[in-house]
Amino acid sequence: MALDLDDWQKVRDMAELLSPVVDGFKVGMRLFYRVGPKVWEFLRGKAEILFADLKLHDIPSTVAGGVRALVAQGVNLLNVHAAGGKAMLQAAVEAAAEEASLQGLPRPWLVAVTVLTSLDDISLREEVGIPEAVSQRVLAWARLARECGLDGVVASPLEVGLLRRELGEDFLLVTPGIRPASYPAGDQKRVATAAEALRAGADLLVVGRPIVASPDPLAAALAIRREMEEGDWFCAPKK
Image (cartoon, rainbow, N blue to C red; front, side, top):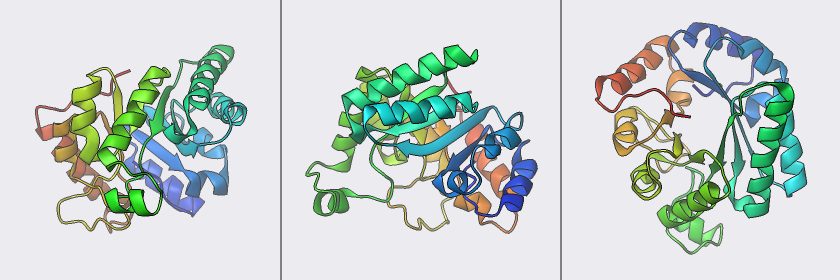
């Protein structure tokens, strides 16, 4: 569940409401930059997964420092951007393991962001300057992430099937861009339903606006949960 909200009271109300029916909470830039580490203190114990979605992307030493800080705050899933390259990714892996050991915590999942779900082949080529198709760039960055020792990647539901076939079952696929069939895509271009993403091989689904913006967030979350659990693909997250 993506807590993409600005108001701290609304965040607390939403988390209390949805805690019984979601497996984790994702905190992105919008919320973390507004309230800071206190968000983890509040969320701890309310869900199994605390996901710091800050897409760290900088020189290796800076990213390593950011990873250490987040691990010390108790998150157990965090991401860096694959575009940072091998040295940065390896520094993040080492920092996560070392800080977890220092704090006496389990090592968190570390995943790499690939191509944002707001991009398609045309915008990737004409605006970002990468000539490959989105699927090929996602696969290349996913291979790099695995080579560097990361647990998996963040990728849209449209690439999940390719990644699962190419990288196997022991590679964590975190999938945003989840929308009910009748829900508008908004500013995301590569989207799918929960059932479609799970059928393709996704491990963890990230859902925000279809729940947060609903007049009945609990009913919206339960509907997506039912869709997830009705198929024979449903399983607990792997680590």
